[in-house]
Image: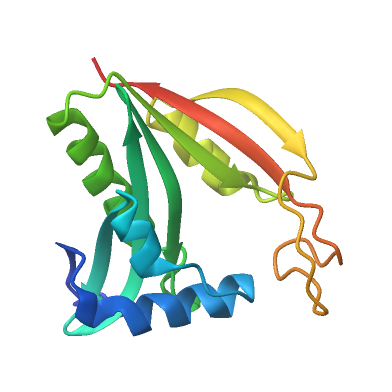
Length: 161
Protein backbone atom coordinates (compact mmCIF):
# COMPACT_ATOMS: atom_id res chain seq x y z
CA UNK A 1 0.00 0.00 0.00
CA UNK A 2 1.38 3.37 -0.97
CA UNK A 3 0.74 6.78 0.52
CA UNK A 4 -1.37 7.62 -2.51
CA UNK A 5 -3.48 4.45 -2.22
CA UNK A 6 -7.19 4.81 -1.80
CA UNK A 7 -8.89 2.03 0.08
CA UNK A 8 -12.61 1.80 -0.60
CA UNK A 9 -14.99 -0.11 1.69
CA UNK A 10 -17.87 -1.74 -0.18
CA UNK A 11 -20.70 -4.15 0.55
CA UNK A 12 -20.00 -7.76 -0.24
CA UNK A 13 -20.64 -9.02 -3.75
CA UNK A 14 -20.34 -12.72 -4.64
CA UNK A 15 -17.56 -11.84 -7.12
CA UNK A 16 -15.33 -11.17 -4.07
CA UNK A 17 -15.82 -14.62 -2.53
CA UNK A 18 -12.65 -16.26 -3.85
CA UNK A 19 -10.45 -13.31 -2.86
CA UNK A 20 -11.94 -13.09 0.66
CA UNK A 21 -11.59 -16.85 1.09
CA UNK A 22 -7.93 -16.70 -0.03
CA UNK A 23 -7.13 -14.08 2.63
CA UNK A 24 -8.77 -16.20 5.32
CA UNK A 25 -7.06 -19.41 4.20
CA UNK A 26 -3.68 -17.64 4.29
CA UNK A 27 -4.35 -16.46 7.84
CA UNK A 28 -6.31 -19.28 9.43
CA UNK A 29 -5.47 -22.43 7.38
CA UNK A 30 -9.12 -23.18 6.79
CA UNK A 31 -11.87 -21.95 4.54
CA UNK A 32 -14.77 -20.32 6.37
CA UNK A 33 -18.09 -20.98 4.66
CA UNK A 34 -18.52 -17.49 3.16
CA UNK A 35 -21.75 -18.18 1.28
CA UNK A 36 -23.18 -20.15 4.21
CA UNK A 37 -22.36 -17.20 6.52
CA UNK A 38 -24.14 -14.80 4.20
CA UNK A 39 -27.14 -17.08 4.00
CA UNK A 40 -27.20 -17.17 7.82
CA UNK A 41 -27.41 -13.39 8.04
CA UNK A 42 -23.76 -12.35 8.32
CA UNK A 43 -23.10 -8.83 7.04
CA UNK A 44 -19.88 -8.48 5.04
CA UNK A 45 -17.80 -5.48 4.05
CA UNK A 46 -14.82 -5.69 1.70
CA UNK A 47 -11.78 -3.40 1.41
CA UNK A 48 -10.64 -2.71 -2.14
CA UNK A 49 -7.52 -1.02 -3.44
CA UNK A 50 -8.41 -0.30 -7.03
CA UNK A 51 -10.14 -3.60 -7.86
CA UNK A 52 -8.03 -5.80 -5.57
CA UNK A 53 -9.61 -7.23 -2.41
CA UNK A 54 -7.23 -6.42 0.46
CA UNK A 55 -9.45 -7.18 3.43
CA UNK A 56 -12.87 -8.10 4.73
CA UNK A 57 -14.94 -7.84 7.88
CA UNK A 58 -18.16 -9.50 8.85
CA UNK A 59 -20.56 -9.84 11.71
CA UNK A 60 -24.18 -10.34 12.60
CA UNK A 61 -27.03 -8.75 14.47
CA UNK A 62 -28.42 -10.70 17.41
CA UNK A 63 -31.37 -8.86 18.93
CA UNK A 64 -30.09 -5.35 19.65
CA UNK A 65 -26.47 -6.55 19.76
CA UNK A 66 -24.05 -6.58 16.82
CA UNK A 67 -21.21 -9.10 16.98
CA UNK A 68 -18.19 -8.25 14.84
CA UNK A 69 -16.97 -11.74 14.08
CA UNK A 70 -13.96 -11.20 11.83
CA UNK A 71 -11.85 -8.39 10.45
CA UNK A 72 -8.92 -9.56 8.37
CA UNK A 73 -6.56 -7.78 5.97
CA UNK A 74 -3.76 -8.88 3.68
CA UNK A 75 -0.44 -9.03 5.49
CA UNK A 76 1.04 -6.06 3.64
CA UNK A 77 -1.94 -3.91 4.69
CA UNK A 78 -1.58 -4.53 8.42
CA UNK A 79 -0.54 -1.44 10.30
CA UNK A 80 -2.59 0.69 7.89
CA UNK A 81 -6.07 2.06 8.57
CA UNK A 82 -7.67 -0.67 6.41
CA UNK A 83 -8.88 -2.85 9.30
CA UNK A 84 -10.07 0.21 11.19
CA UNK A 85 -12.16 1.40 8.24
CA UNK A 86 -13.64 -2.08 7.75
CA UNK A 87 -14.60 -2.25 11.44
CA UNK A 88 -16.03 1.26 11.45
CA UNK A 89 -18.20 0.47 8.43
CA UNK A 90 -19.80 -2.38 10.39
CA UNK A 91 -20.10 -0.19 13.48
CA UNK A 92 -22.05 2.33 11.39
CA UNK A 93 -24.20 -0.49 10.03
CA UNK A 94 -24.93 -1.63 13.60
CA UNK A 95 -25.99 1.90 14.57
CA UNK A 96 -28.26 2.13 11.51
CA UNK A 97 -29.88 -1.16 12.54
CA UNK A 98 -30.64 0.20 16.02
CA UNK A 99 -28.14 -1.96 17.89
CA UNK A 100 -27.31 -0.74 21.38
CA UNK A 101 -23.98 -2.56 21.73
CA UNK A 102 -21.17 -3.89 19.58
CA UNK A 103 -19.08 -6.88 20.68
CA UNK A 104 -15.71 -7.71 19.16
CA UNK A 105 -13.89 -11.01 19.58
CA UNK A 106 -10.15 -10.34 19.26
CA UNK A 107 -7.30 -12.86 19.20
CA UNK A 108 -4.35 -11.10 20.87
CA UNK A 109 -1.49 -13.44 21.79
CA UNK A 110 0.81 -10.76 23.12
CA UNK A 111 0.04 -8.17 20.44
CA UNK A 112 -1.20 -5.24 22.51
CA UNK A 113 -1.42 -2.74 19.61
CA UNK A 114 -4.93 -3.75 18.60
CA UNK A 115 -6.07 -3.83 22.23
CA UNK A 116 -4.84 -0.24 22.66
CA UNK A 117 -6.70 0.85 19.52
CA UNK A 118 -9.90 -0.76 20.80
CA UNK A 119 -9.64 1.09 24.12
CA UNK A 120 -8.80 4.37 22.38
CA UNK A 121 -12.07 4.12 20.44
CA UNK A 122 -14.20 3.51 23.51
CA UNK A 123 -14.31 -0.28 23.65
CA UNK A 124 -14.15 -1.92 27.09
CA UNK A 125 -12.66 -5.32 27.77
CA UNK A 126 -15.34 -7.59 29.20
CA UNK A 127 -13.79 -11.06 28.98
CA UNK A 128 -10.38 -12.69 28.36
CA UNK A 129 -10.20 -16.41 27.59
CA UNK A 130 -7.07 -18.51 27.03
CA UNK A 131 -7.55 -21.45 24.69
CA UNK A 132 -10.63 -19.95 23.07
CA UNK A 133 -9.93 -21.16 19.56
CA UNK A 134 -8.69 -24.73 19.15
CA UNK A 135 -7.66 -26.04 15.73
CA UNK A 136 -7.27 -29.67 14.84
CA UNK A 137 -5.01 -29.29 11.82
CA UNK A 138 -1.64 -30.81 11.13
CA UNK A 139 -0.13 -27.33 10.84
CA UNK A 140 0.59 -25.06 13.80
CA UNK A 141 -1.59 -22.00 14.29
CA UNK A 142 -0.23 -18.97 12.45
CA UNK A 143 -1.11 -16.74 15.41
CA UNK A 144 0.19 -18.58 18.47
CA UNK A 145 2.32 -21.28 16.86
CA UNK A 146 0.58 -23.98 18.89
CA UNK A 147 -0.84 -27.24 17.66
CA UNK A 148 -3.53 -27.37 18.78
CA UNK A 149 -4.01 -23.63 18.77
CA UNK A 150 -4.06 -21.98 22.19
CA UNK A 151 -4.87 -18.41 21.25
CA UNK A 152 -5.97 -15.85 23.82
CA UNK A 153 -9.24 -14.17 22.96
CA UNK A 154 -10.39 -10.85 24.38
CA UNK A 155 -13.98 -9.71 24.08
CA UNK A 156 -14.57 -5.98 23.84
CA UNK A 157 -17.87 -4.13 24.17
CA UNK A 158 -18.84 -0.69 22.91
CA UNK A 159 -22.13 1.00 23.73
CA UNK A 160 -23.66 2.54 20.63
CA UNK A 161 -26.30 4.80 22.19
